[in-house]
Image 1 (cartoon, rainbow, N blue to C red):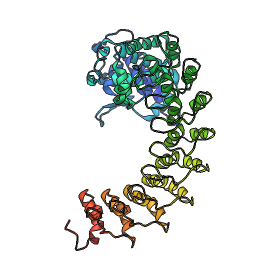
Image 2 (cartoon, helix red, strand yellow):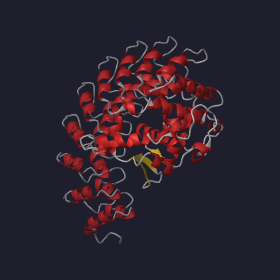
Image 3 (spheres, rainbow, N blue to C red):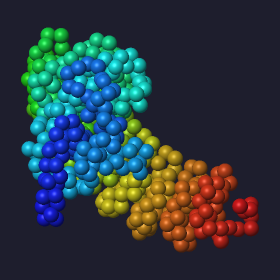
Image 4 (cartoon, rainbow, N blue to C red):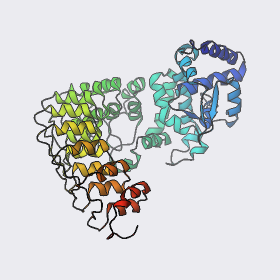
Length: 506
């Protein structure tokens, strides 16, 4: 594309000018282009400047090495710009075609991911950063590159890692196994599990757990040969290295760990999730197949919430994994979790049409099964506004379109609340559906639609002769009152003409 637009030659000429600047200008210009084009996410100006100020090797960061942003813009000869429209002042390439140009010419930069991994690891191993290890909430503005290095050094290392980079990683892991390192807290916080970390009973997040998390094959291989690493050890939440690798779909690491006699391929964590559960949850078909190849692995083992690997896969809409698991005789396709929610209900709630069809193809699956809450797959589909799934379920004779849950709410009631006009219309085609049916609180679909400001749904409901627009709930509140309470002026305008003289002024 860039060559066709005549941009390829222009980019080549500009990059050549960057290189011929010589000295620090050339180095900074090319390094800035490398970082921006190979970063795992858009870089903030402070991050880029500090990344280019890191000298690989020394353990003390020299602030004098950090270039200014105007200097970098100048060194790049107009190929980068700072997007000041965002509060973070993101740095980007001047045009998307430049990214295409650089991606099509891998020889422009020498092993970029390896170089970036070395810089990240040098930064994390520096004395100022290690000094933050005991503080769970460091001064991030004082260490602008800390977040990026903590979250993405492993992603770069997985793509390319030099021998020196590996030694830097092993040096970092000595901190993991000793006093701990702030980078692990940032990483686990990003994963959304740091808040549960103190609740665990296992050992801390080790270097082997981290290398398995990122899927860095060479580092994992080196660590499992070291006598002090237990390849089957759970961390503070019971996650084994195998669990981390399976969770993130790192097939080579999973294969390596499964080759160790001491590794239990079905070991659950503190929440009862096994490596297979995590692989199913993430939709990692290759890992699922590897784990199911082991006799010790139970393909239908529930976690502490009662969810099986099939339930997790259905909830995530992972068709390939669902198909694999349904091919196992031990797997029950209609097994509910502790809340009574079946794989079908999970799939219906998520709008996963293909998975719904697969599950309904099994005779054992009850398409109208109630959860503990009394909600059916149809109610879940209606709540999510998944019209096609509602149609599929309504084709089954067993499905009752008016079946209430434990709160007396029908699928139509949920469709009203969540504003799915398509689902409302589909359900209205069924003669059994009563559009003004109140739940246990005396509230109707119109009441919920009014409260949540669903203007289109309110219009449809007001056009039905069966619907009483002034019907009060058990607290005496009408749909008009609900809309007014929540400030939905357009809905109030629709309902006001229907107000009766018995209603209080609004």
